[in-house]
Image 1 (cartoon, one colour):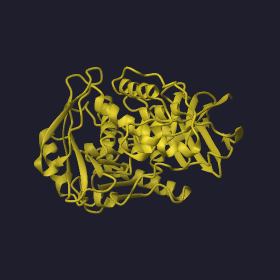
Image 2 (image 1 turned 30 degrees about the vertical axis):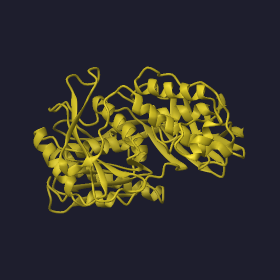
Image 3 (image 1 turned 180 degrees about the vertical axis):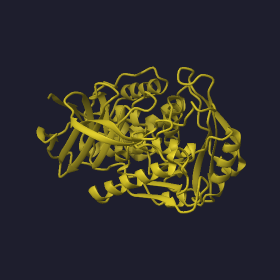
Length: 456
């Protein structure tokens, strides 16, 4: 296995605060402009290659540089030529907006949505954001119900994004690629606005929205503080529980809600979360409940008040990620991982990364996982329960990003992959690492100064 280090950080900024002004003094304006142009190009889809301009950094300058890079990112989002997220207005005004979806992802598709805030106070770190997904009835009626519920849930002060599914019918789902385009854009623009707390984003939904929010919770767990599907229940191959290690997860379904095996699949989800809690104490916070005597209609009001107490920790030192495709699309990265070359030879297998960082030692296990269906329904052939089979991953390339909140960057770190030590040494810090991860994750909490480039 080959292993290379790359580095992180220097920085830039356009004044405003003493820290960003100080960072500007450390870098020439030409580099600042290069980064800004790169950011705009990446947002508009013109720059798909990594940023390569190198500039080393001292550990004492990391915080100021991070702030500077984020400031440039915010300015680039303002300058990019694209449909913008509107200014937050009171949710009670019921103002409707819309975003277009590219024809290549979903023809004739436009995502209409409500976007607004509740409450009389403005939280110091920005509003918690709740994304609410409606059910599969007539979309205008379901959308109307969604905004009414969002206005009554006891979670203020908060902001809500309440979309209407672009197209109706059995082939249109919240987790498909056209909608992934919207979620990626929503995470990016809402966080860049400075109005949303990046550590308090929650995903909820009812019925079809319950299925969608459970899948999306596993797919996008690294952006979320919590998720709360209701009256749903997904086969767990579609929503691996492992990915929810660091978020709060709620799933409430009527015990008599047997349509599409919702109650059975909710029970399997509870059993798996319970098992993960035992094997990983302190992780997999969950509240999965089958409500006695209830069918498809339950009390929806308890989910967001439970979720709102949970805040994302973006600097976790234990991560589990099953890298799965959704509607033929993979994430490029997750938490502090970036996948440069996939390990799985085809979509019949997936790669599972398990990361633990302790005392400047990084333990990374990478395995391929395949599924065998052990239970399916006798009418439609829906796979309901699975057995997983693991084997060591022996190819692929992953970049692991690190910062001062994960390891002591002044000291050597040791990397152990699948039980074998592969590297010991001090990490170099370079501006390109910060720029590339800011562009990829669009997250002020994940602008990393150090990187290990790992060939499995």
